[in-house]
Image (tube, rainbow over all chains, first blue to last red; front, side):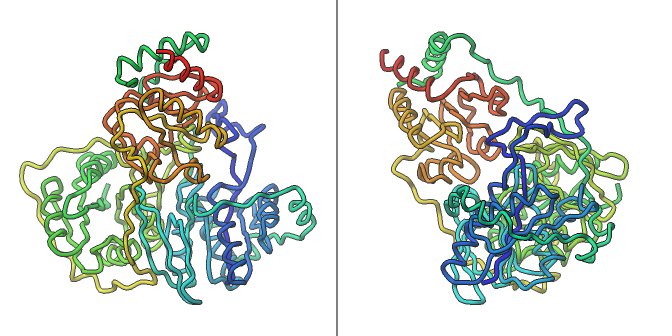
Length: 260
Length: 322
C-alpha cells in the first residue's frame, strides 16, 4: 500500500510553557523546543506498521520552512521511505483550508492508496484531514484509533467517539484518515537512525511546482492576536513548606469528604 | 446580517443534546435577533421525538429523515446537508467527535469558511471575530473569519449559556425528500460500547487523578498509595492511557469516563477542556502541578505548585499517620 502521512512541526507543549509576546502578535518563540506534532507521530508509526505487514511505501510530507526538514528526517529515521517539503513564501500565514489545498496539489502528483494525518495539533483545529479528503473527493474518517486491512480496496477502521465508545466503519480506498493518539506506541528513534538519514535528499516543492496561485492559499481565517485567558477566579494557592501546605490541605480534604 | 443561521441538533434515542440550547445563544452573538433554523437528522420515531423536542426552542426545525441516518455517519449526513443548505449559510455544529468528523469537509463542499472549537464570537465589520484556545489551553487567540461565502462554525459544548424554551411551539418542516444521495465510501458497521474496568471510577467519591506530569510508570504507585490512604481510587488523563500505563476505563474526559466525585485531586494534569469535560457535579478540585501556569489552576479550588514525586508520598504519609 502506498501511504502518505501529513506531518507538522510544532512547539512541544509537554516541554514548553507557552507565553504570549509583549504586543500579543505571537507566542514567545525564542528558546521553544519544537518537535513533530504528537498525533502525526502516531500516524507515521501506524503507516510504518502497515508497510511492514503488507508492503508498499511510506512518504511523509510537511508544509513548512527549512527547519521543518528535521521533522521529516526524524520520521524517516523511524522508517518512512521518503520526505517531501512543501515550502513557499506564499504558504506562510495560510489557514487550514490553504494547507489542505497545498497538500492536495502534492498528492495529485503521486498515486497514494491511503493518506493519514494527525487528528489535530495543539495550535490547530483538527481540520486539515477532513478538508483534504473533501478536496480530493476521498472518503474520510476522523479520530481513528484502529485500522484493519480487509482487502486491497477496503479498510475497517475504529473511530474514538464520546464516552470511550468505538465506532466501527468500513471505508473504501483511497481514503483519508485522521489518527488519534493511543492507536499504537510510536517506536523510539535513536541517534543512529537520525544519522542514517541525515544526508538523504529531501525534495522541496514550491507554489510554482504545485501549480498554486497566491489566491488559492489566501487564508479565510486570520489570527489577530494571542492573549492569556481570564478564567474564573482561579485556585486558592497554598504556599509555605510542604509540611505547612499538607496541614492546610488535610484540613480541607477532611471538610470536603476527601478522606475516608 | 443577511445570511441564514442554521444549528445542527444532536440527539440520541430521541433525546436532544444540551448543545441544542447553547447553539441558539451562539447564533445570537452573531445576530442578536437570530432565530436559527434547526437541522435534525435521523430516522423513525426517534427522529420525530427529537424534532418535536427541538421545536420547543427553535421556531423552525428542518427534519431530515432517512433510514441511513439512524446512526449519525458524518459522511452520509454531509451529503444530506449539502442538498438542503443555501450556499451562504452559517452553520453551527457542536465541537465533538461528530462535529470534528463532519464540519471540515462540509465547509469545503459549501465553499464556506471553517473555524473549529469556538469559545466566544462576535461580528466585526464583515468578518466574524472568534476566540479559540491554543497549546492545550495555555494561551487564547482572536481570529477574524470571512463570512461572505458562508461559514461552518464548531462551538465548544458548554461555552455558551443555554436558552429557555419558547412560549409557543416551532414549526417542523420535512425536508427529507430533498435528500437523494445517501451512499458514500464509508459505511457504519457497529458501535462498540466501552468495556467496564476493574474499578468503576464513575461511582467513586474520591479520585486521585494523574496526568503526564506524573513522569513515569512508577509514579502510578505513588498515586495508588495516596488514593488508598484517602479511601479513593486512581483515575487519569489521556496521555497515561495512550502510554498504556492504565486502562481506558480509568480515563476521565470527553473521550473517556464522566465522573462525579466529591473530591478530585488533579496531579500533574494541565487541564485541557477535553479532560475537564469529563468532570461533572462541581467537585472540590485540588490541583498539584509543578508548572504554576498550568491552566488547571484557573478552574481548581485549591492549587499547589509542587513536585509530585516528593509531595504525594509526604501527603500519603501524613494521612496514614492520622
